[in-house]
Image 1 (cartoon, one colour):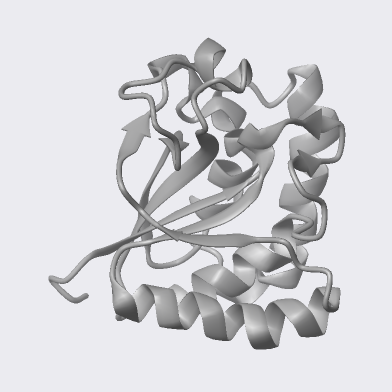
Image 2 (cartoon, rainbow, N blue to C red):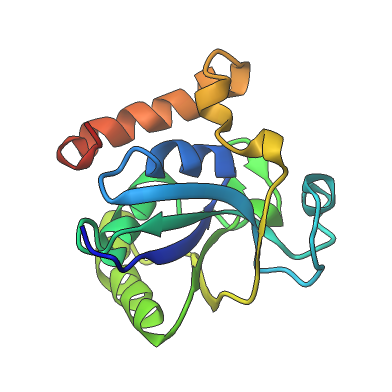
Length: 179
């Protein structure tokens, strides 16, 4: 493996769902649930849910680009959430659930714009509302939010919402899963 690591910061609904998927991909070394895209330093979950901070629930994905590319991560991202509904994923509603790609530099921005123009629009049509914005600051969520699905697979939200997304992802991306 390469010594170079990159990070991607993505929001597409509840961070528990995104974390449960991305941590299963080959080349992904770490996934941290957190908050980004807002204007309040060090927000809490309650503050973000109150919609007064401007933050989205996001995941910070650390990956080895020699194993999985940023583009591949974005393609997975656009297959595991609905990028056509502003501020909503299923029953989760609010600005913290918006579809967002927070890029770290011009190369990530260009890739995000290209994937939106091609892959996302081919899959979802012209109605894609995902925002692409520069990453200013990422704040890790509280410790009890980290690895939530792994630690609580029988919890109601995990069984009803996350498990079906994980199953759909595992079927679609079977060849890219960790052993």
